Amino acid sequence: MDPRVKTSRAALTQQLTLSLELTKLMSDDFEALTRLRSSKSAAASAELQQRVVSFNTELASVFEAIQGTDNAPTTQAIAAVHDLESRWKELEQQLRREHQ
Image (cartoon, rainbow, N blue to C red; front, side, top):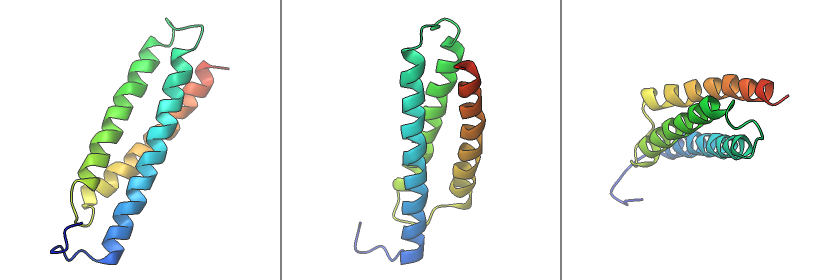
């Protein structure tokens, strides 16, 4: 971190917390994609694979926005993380239904 930046410890903690949440989501997303790609019904899951890949791209974009600065996360970034978390829960449920 640039020593000239005077970001508070609380803001940096918030940045770290959000980044760790996104890292966990990216890991879960990657595991799901790996399972989909090794699935025997690859044709049926092609659309779902694309949704998982697109979701991962969104995760990476928000992660870069949060990590790309030594400032507190913006309210938009915080909202984006919460939105991604809820969307992941929905996508994860769909993944479970598809592979039961």
